[in-house]
Amino acid sequence: MEFIPHEIDRDVFILMADGGINRDNARAFSDDVESMVRNGFNKLIIDCSKLDYISSTGLGTLLVLHKRMKAAGGEVKLCSVKGFVAQALRLIRLDHMFGIYPDLGQARLAFRPTDGEAAEAGE
Image (cartoon, rainbow, N blue to C red; front, top):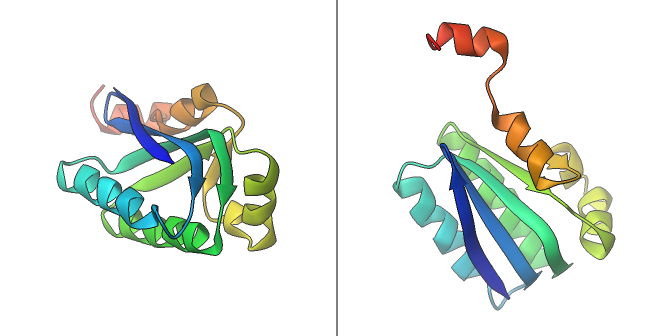
């Protein structure tokens, strides 16, 4: 399993999960995200297009990640979730907690400010 810092799009950090999230690598994943938050990123997209497996530990890690990001004023979105991972998220109802998008492009758009938010920000 690898967690690849895919790119930074404005203030959105995009992380690609490749393989599976389980007990063996969940801590490294969590540490990577903690580092990202310490460096000022509070918007995260996890690209799950190459994520084939997630254990109960991995699901718990996503839940903790969501709570930490929310506490930091941020948000986590998932994209390209498929197969077993999508079923697991639905089974324990995490699909209602995360913004889940069919592809990376739509997840990126979900972080764009609406016209009202852009006006408030002076854009």
